[in-house]
Picture 1: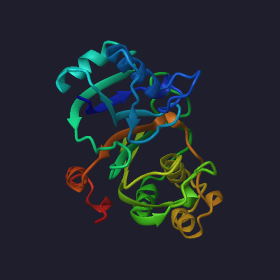
Picture 2 (picture 1 turned 90 degrees about the vertical axis):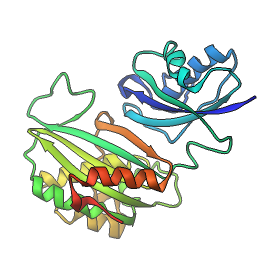
Picture 3 (picture 1 turned 30 degrees about the horizontal axis):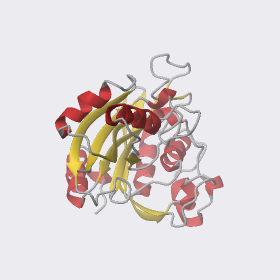
Picture 4 (picture 1 turned 60 degrees about the vertical axis):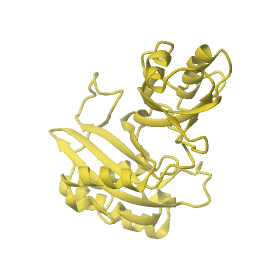
Length: 267
């Protein structure tokens, strides 16, 4: 009997050419499908909640596949991990309804973008954060981040390579956290366009350094002009942290995170 299995995937994306399987390149999807095929002794197709670009990480990517192997779901992580390289780990597995689809039933995601301020690179952080060499105005950036909240057309915050006809998205949470010279931009939304989070983070950084005015985000949302936004910052600072499949799951996450920052919630 064919069963649909869902898996929670964590990976260090630094040495991968993104999530999506591509002939001749090392990808996360390709490595997991290879491992599943070793166990099933047949070809297995993996469906993710979405793609992550080259160099992007994940602690909460979700994907599903179908197979007929008589292995209990709680045994799947150990079995599959034994065939995977060390920079991919299956954290959880569960049986799902056959109609479930990791991509089409997704109701939202959480991303975290990390950067640090230093005049010189840091050898132990450069795989997971982007260096910013300028002084940053924290309060100005915090105020600007709240502008992202709500439902807007984010066409001005995506790449020319974006092939989506509908570029309207809802942002539920957007906030900045700083510990010393280490910064994090946390954002949750109904969905994200190609490079959208990296442009959002880059725009905040450019506002903080004074390259853009504080109202730059409003102007980009109004005009949909990519040229008025900040640069697309590097992929290494970006991590996919969670994928939502129900309104309740999303609301519980918002309740937890907004205990720390009540100003960054949109209903």
